[in-house]
Length: 508
Ligand SMILES: Cc1ncc(COP(=O)(O)O)c(C=O)c1O
Image (cartoon, rainbow, N blue to C red):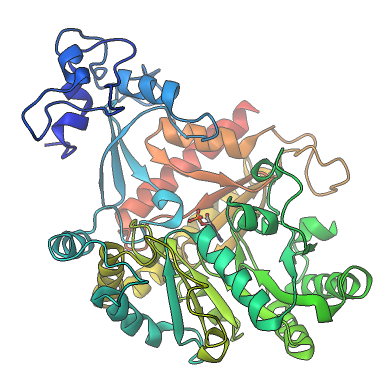
């Protein structure tokens, strides 16, 4: 059996089907209803055929037709969403996803760093299913619920600093970022936030204002939330220095830029928080050097500013440690978590120390679905599986293999010159290519290098059966495979990647 998609949602259920306008009066897509009545859609779909899913086409690079269900999506899902493919997911299992066009793809995106234990990990799915039969919505402003408290119990020993002992769970990373900003403003009585050039923290209004990775996220929406001051991140591009520049030098340059902002743009007395990802994700998978984070901690301590660490993408063993900030020994005042926390169930969290959160007025934090019981139960199972299945050891072993395979590629005389940088930690790894990027003052891209390498290579990987993502305004491909990926699947993915790089670079 390839799929467990409920029959009423499965493309096959639409066969034979109509071509257009097959939404029911009630707006639903579906077949037979619970009551035994048949929806408008299913009545109509029973008599026509164009919504049938296309025949499986699996040969690499072959042009695929878009299924009728996907065409429906193209018509009715907002154009504001971008997608890697126009196919429809039908199943996820471990490191693989299946699509309605018959493809079974190796998934090196992990749903953008979320399904860290692979799709539908049986223990996580079971914990969620069991919770569904007990309590789904234990509203957090009405009473505690057990999975919420059990999850805190699991997370406390994993915190990068023992001071982080007060939790609030929400749904998305963006919400948690906004909550962290609100908390910092309230606690310090100050308004301004310093954020990183290249940082990504989400797309809701407050999160969008502190996001500085690409203009697309706020295009046409200005003015944004005021009081946000971006500073240069220690990434060689941002200082127009060569890729090999030492972390020490990059840290010095960035801390100097911060000093300038604090003396020319916002007085430190007006700054509530400095917000930073320990590895900027959408900004290109660049780890913040230890010297830099230590420097930020000193600035914060000197001026009574809170340090907010965004571990949404880098947390939960993604980098080989539970939290990436652990590599630096720096203590966050507030830490934001999400993504891998519940392996696909919507759950985020703001963690801080009680002394800070005790200042909040009851009712100032909350949310209808905040800390959903099913998501929290999944989170408890994630913490258990990470320990029981030695996920950390796997990350360390697979990371070495991944870096070794990329180093091989860099040594290849045909493609090596097209690779500017390989970086990252654990299984949060990036390859940056030398394609020209349109930044005419950037001296470190090669105008003679093949154009759009990252995008073209990601597309070629997809043709060969691998989903992999690009990131940043530069030509970067990011590796975020599941953390429990096997040696064989990792090798399969890196082989596809190497072939794609060689083919695309040679095409120019
Ligand atoms: C570092 C970081 N912070 C915040 C967010 C926003 O999270 P969400 O998409 O759940 O709102 C993301 C999402 O990719 C992220 O990578």
